[in-house]
Structure formats: C-alpha cells, structure tokens
Length: 503
Image (cartoon, rainbow, N blue to C red):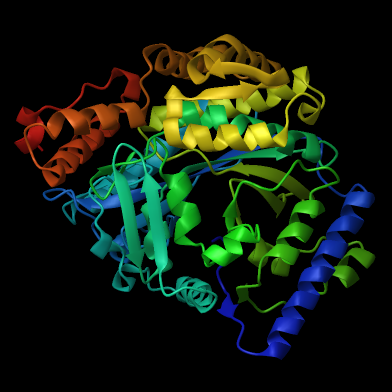
C-alpha cells in the first residue's frame, strides 16, 4: 500500500466527506482525460521487488524488517510490507529503451546486496519466492504484522467487514489445503515482482485489455509458488491465496456474484480508465480514508494537476491483477501506468528481469499486431486461461486467439516469443539484452522447467526420504544459494537429501 497516512472511517460524516472527495477525483480525472493533460510522448518502465527474510540456520521467517530498516541508512528505495518478515524495494522508473532491462536487473541486484549486507549482522538471508516454502500458520498471527498505523488500519477495516467468523483458505492441487484463520495477514504469504508500463492515455483501454489477455501465458512461464504449509497446491498458489486471504464475503455473497477485493475483473475495458475506478467505487466498500488536503475539481479548474489522493487510497485497497495507476511525472504532467501484479518474486534476479522483458515485449509486440484484442478473444476465455495458468502453470492448455487450443509452452515458443522480440526491438532495446532475457524464457519453455516445476519435483523427491518440514527447509536453502549466484531457474539442479545439512 503506497499511501502512507491513512485511517479507518469512524463516523458517517467522515465517510461522506471521503466519498465526496472520491467522486470529485473521478470527475477531475475525466476532465484531464478530455483535455489531453496526460504525458503521452514517453514510455517508461519500473518495478517493485518484494522479498522474504529468513533465519540462516532454520530457514524460517526472520521477523526483523524494522530493525533492518534502522540499519539501512540512506535507502529511500527500501520500504516495509505487511509482515515483519517482508521488505520491498522500489526500482527506478526508466525510459523503455536501450539498456533499460539490464539496468533494472543491475539495480535490483545492487539493492539486494545492500540489504543482505545488513541482514548478515542478524544472521538472516533474503529469499525471492512467490510464497516462502517454510512459512507456517503461526507465522501469520497478528503479532507479526509490521507495526505501522496504515497496516493496523487496513487489517481493522478488513476484519470489520468480514461477514463470517474467520478467513478461509481452500486450495486443492496434488495435496489439499483447508485452513481457517482469524487474521487477513494470510495475505503476507505472497511476494511478487510488480512490473509497471507507462502507456498513453489514448491507448490505455487497448493496452489494458492486452495485459488481461497476456496474464495467463505470463503466469504459466513465471510460476514460482507451488508449496504452501508443506503442501503441493497450484503452480502459482499466490493467485488463490491472495484472493481468499482478503475475501470478506460469505457463501451467500458468492452466489450473488459479488467480486472479491482481489480480482481479475468482470469483463473487457470499453470506455476509459475511469470505468475501472467507477466500477471499484460502486462494487467495493471504502475501507480507509485519509486527510484530503486538496480540492481536485478546483485545482483542474485552475490548471493545476491534483494528486487525486482519495482515489489513490481507494485504489490501494482493491487488488486487480492488472492494476491501473495514476502518477505525476517529474515534469509535473500526469501519466498512466499498468501495473502487472501476476509475476511472483524470484526465482532469481535474472529470472525476474526475464519475466519483465517477456511481458513488456509482448505488450508492445501484441499491440502492434492486434489493434483490438477484444475482437479476436472472449473475456470468458481470457479469465479461464488465467485460472488454468495459476493452477497448472507451464502444463496448461489455453483457448487462444480465434478459439485456438494450444499448450502454454507451444504458445510461448511459437507465437509470443517472436512477438516479444519484435516489441523490444521496436523500442530499440539493446539486442544483447533481448537475446539474454528472452533466451531464458525460451529455455524454460523448451525444458518445461519453471520455478514451480523445480520446487514440485524437488519436494516430491525429497519427501521419499525426509519429512515435509525438512524438505521445504532444504528447498528454501537451495533457492537462496542459487539466487545469490543469480543462476536462472532452468539450470538449477534439484536438491538431494545430501544437501539437507549443507546450508
């Protein structure tokens, strides 16, 4: 949650004031769109790297994020996340051209090394993983919530609207997980590599729909979250866990087709970006408020660019997998971004940059080939593909353009990688970066080896000789070792029982 100073709504008058500001922000947004205020002459990319902190000996969560930040001086790029065992780094926005992808990877590695240097003093390690394999249910109790007002406010607001007696996780893969929990801190299971693409206001609808169509193949090739509480679940279990951990509905609400706060969307975007905001305002209760110190309508009337603070706060409590983002560039102009939230953290920094390169290249390449993706695919198929990819990863078969049935790896190898290459070339990305990062994606698809596949095969083999707890500990140790050497996951060897005591 990027907005820092927020609070729960304690009275009806506070609610009315905030909702009024929220509606004013939408109206101001519409005015800026209609009058071409947005920065449309440059394309930038950016990313956020979430991570877990683990004890070097036990490989269990190390709840030390506040202590680490105290030692990490002059690091505005590093911030807290929901749980005490999480941190996040914000990578610099950079123009989508030249060495942008390798620059992103190098910056990511640089930040991780600086954090690791501090962690060494706490006998702890960073691990990049969609879901920490050694995480246990007690690790998600309230006492591990990062002690910041905005997190307490968010937890209290979600719990206030819970209609049942507890939050529930029900996910079935090779194994089955059925858990009840009294806190939405279950959401802290998830860590991701969130990639941002700045888009033209005139192209936002077309590009957003493109991002929706691409979500499934991106998940399939980047899946890295198959183990939860010692059970083998979906290839990208984050998708199920994130939705269910913040789901306040009852079974009766599900039947009424109310969307959960974490959702993929209900249909294609047709009008403009404000369609998303209007839908979210109408569908989802306001959870948090904050001091609104601007009159957005008065500001646009005077030619000033507003921060749209009320809209930003509400947008931060509705979790679309492709999230619309509003920002103000250094030149003072407003801009629009699409934030891709489907990509998990890891398996290594170079893998993360490869995932970003694949998505970014596909976004540009596909937009050049298809003027309107909604004319050649149905939203029902896109949503179905999204869920299949989360469950089965690289093993999925998708319904693709013009009702074509195609295995995920074949789609990636034959259709999407050429599109991604063309897209990156059109942005004048350095040719050696294109071959490096898309080469990693190609090898994963050819070898049928993602982070999820590696972890599942490793866990199943290890379980023949050691306990589930020992197996996830071994996998966590092997993951950290490979990450520290920045080895792409398709080259990782599966850990053996002899590795169990080597960390």
